[in-house]
Every structure is written in structure tokens, then in C-alpha cells.
Image (cartoon, rainbow over all chains, first blue to last red; front, side):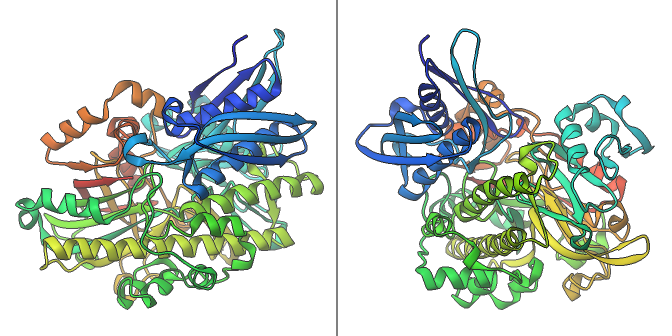
Length: 139
Length: 476
């Protein structure tokens, strides 16, 4: 399958859903879905790379930690990210993340993401072998 | 929502008797139409809240309730620390102490009509709004510590506002029990450039006209007359509060699994109030409340400056400041006995009744002002707390309309530019850094705020005092 992402409906917030042939690809796509809550990922230039590490007891909590690490880096560095490369070793995640400083006039960001929640949180592999990583983010 | 699931106490009170692991009933206050439109998740979430240890009386949902995380938005629950009661980060939310303050201006609509566009542009220039905006106040470690301890009182000491403002803020502008040491360096770092910023999403600054009065005596006490111009500011504790929420939700989840506390939903992660992490969270959350109070105070100062440039005769006085996402230790009468309780209000407003000692003296005979936010093109309301509200829901009322439609649906249905033009034709000027954001926040994406407020009024949670109509909206 081709890796992809989508948003799903939530009354007040936004559900994000990444899919891929591997769990790492699903996490990458979930991160793209996170970016797309804020801005069109295609408008984010891959100028600067930063590295992110996180670790959690299971795949689902690792997804939340990964997204929250991105949310923190975006807020703290005033950056947007549009390209992600995730490597996994068990429940340890190492990622290289590319992006650029936020330019409100050019990027026209929609909304700030406050945090990733445990609502509708699911990480699983379906019968076709595709990995899914989904949760709701608070905006 | 399936109304067959409820026992109906009266026209506006819907009860779910305890079943399974529920320790107390769950009660929703709403009229039949609001109940039918309410999503089923509110039922699931409010019954889940009713299972938490140490909960007192019942788990409550306000008429604007909708699907949140853990608690529904519009959820209220009180816990007794000595009965094993808990504090829940999800029961407070990521945007700690997000709230509304309303200022009177001494102006009427006629006074601002000729300069409305100029005022909108000035406010847009002076109020940092939207994702990535930064304020003019940058705090070093020592100043951060002082802000997290002092709240709006600190802001006034720094020259952002007037000492009189503090009398019109919950906790007199400074939440006791804050412990900045329980706030991580990441949370403090996330906040260092965000003081005095509005944020995004449903946060706004509105210039409004008093369009109708329902209770002349209360309106007079609140300083409101028909056609008066007021300003309302809706925002919260910004990045600091978001980070505190994120970090403690995670810590509480680890705690609950160690303690083998039954959790029907991970978002209900909580800690016994008499535990180390429970106390740490309360210290951090109270620091978050002070951050929100300081933030709204700085924004008030910027608003006054903007008005002074365009309408120097304006005199902006704080009517009141309320918070929507908090856990506060309060004394409430339970079965005729006073008890100290930890009252969670998630997307709900405190609404103390007349005579309560925490209400400013000048307003005490009326009841606490309850400020209900609107949604850009729709009305906002000012209500007053009732004596009866304590028995109904630990002196709590609704906080806004609540969303009726997802952001995605809203974006499919409306275009930002078109909405701005349509609202301009109705005399409402919108200024926003994001057209997509405006579309997602379309007034039509929210429930009918008037129906929500009527239900709160008829249920006795709070009584209507005034309806406000937007004239200018600075949208984050």
C-alpha cells in the first residue's frame, strides 16, 4: 500500500490517522496528519533538521508521546515540520524531522494544537498487513 | 442521544441511576431539543466520570456538553480528598483556566460607529493573535516564577492594569497554592514568548453591544445598560497550560496503572488528592491558573492602549473574569453539612449564588457574574449565579455554545473570506490571521447559544442578565 494519512471527525477537536506498511511509516503519516491540522504540509520547506527521541511502554502511548514531542518542538522553536523519518527499536522511537520557521503570512496556519490525547487512540495492524496509528488532538 | 437511557426528574434534569461501577448518578441539565442533539459520547463520558473514587453527589453535565476527552466538555464533578477523592488532569483539560473576562467601556454603540473600522484595525495590530504570534513580554526564570505565583496581581504590579481590576477576578487575581517547582522547564520554555497572546481556535477578543437586558437590577449592579459597548476576551494559559496538561496526563496514567485504579477511559487518568503526584499536579495546575489570569490581564492592558488611541474618552473597567477549565478547592453544603471539595469544571463556569463571600462586595447581593462566550457572529451572554445552583451542580453553569459540527464539516461548508464579508454586511467586523481558521470557527458550526443559556436559566444553574451582540471580533 501507499503510505497515507487522513483526518477523522471529532465534535470539537480533530482526529488524525496515519497508515503505512510499517509501524514507523504509520507514525510518520500520523505526524503529517498532525501538520495538516495546522497548515498544508506541501507549503512547509525542509530547511532544517532536528532529531527527536521518545520511549513509552507500548505502541499506543508511543504514538501520543511522539506527537506531543512534535507539538512541543513546533511551539518552542516556532517551527513547522513537513517531512518525517522514523526509526523504531521496540518502543523506542528516533526521528529525523525537517521543517522551517513558521511564517504566519505565508503559511496561513489555521489553528494551534495544544496536545495529543488518548481519545480514540489506536495503533494496530490490519488483516492486509497495513499499520494504523490514530488519535485525537486537542485544538 | 437516546432519551430512553434517562430518568427525567423534571423538564430540564436528566438522570442516569448508578449501574455497574458508577458510584453516584450522572445528571445532565438540558432541554429536550438540546438532549436529542447531544452526542452519545456525553452519556459515555459522564457515566465514566461517575465511577471515579471519592466523587460526591453526582457527575454533572451542563447544557452545552459535548464530547471531550475523559470528562465531557461541560462536565462538573467534585471529590472529597478524605474519602479517597481524586484530581484528574483530563477533568481540567489542556487549556488550564481558559476563560472569559468582560470589560465595560463607558461608551455606547453610537460612540464607536464612526471609528469602528479604525478600532478593529488598531485592536488587530495591538493584540497578538493566531498560531506563532508572540507577545511583547518575555520572562526570565525569576520573572516566570513571580508570574506563576502572582497571576494577575503580578501583572498589575508590572504595570499591566489597575489594582481595582483584581477585585473583579476569581481568587482576586491570584490563585493560592501555586507551586512553580511542579511546572517543568519545558512548560516554562513553551511560555516564555507567549505572555499577552490570544492564541487560536475558539479564542477571541470581541467588542460587543449590550443588545438586551433581562434583569435590570443585576444589570445595574454589573454596570450594564442597553446599547453599552463592552469588550470580552476569551483565552487561557497558552503553551504553559498545554504542556502541564500533557505531562501530568501521562504521569497520572502511569500512577493509575501502579495503583490499580479502575479506569474506564485512559483520559480519566487521575491521582488521589492525598498523593504526591496529586499534590504536584494541583501545584502545577494552580500555577497554570495564574498564568491564564496574568495573560488575560496583559491583554486587558493592550486593549486599553488600543482603545486609548482611537477612543480616548473610553474608560475600560473590568466587570469580571471567570475561568472555565479548573479544579478548585471549595466549601459546599452536602446534605446540609459544609464539606471541603475539589470541584472540577471542564468547560464549565463557577456560578456562586448571592451572598457568597468570594464574590466582590459590590456584586455580592446579585450573585457571581457568569460570562458565556459566543462564536464570532452569535450572541454572548452575561448571567448571574443563583442560590439554588449549589444544590444543582456545586455552583456551576455552562460556558458557551459548544460545537455542533466538526472543524472538517465547517471547513467544507464555509469559506473564510465569504464568512467575513457576510458578517461585515451584518455590521460585524472580523480580523483574523487565518481564513481557514475563520471557516472552522463559523458561527453556524456551534450550537444555538441562546438555547443553551435559556436551558441554564430555566434549570436554575444561573439567571440571565444581558445578551451581547458582536461588533468587532479579533479571532485567534
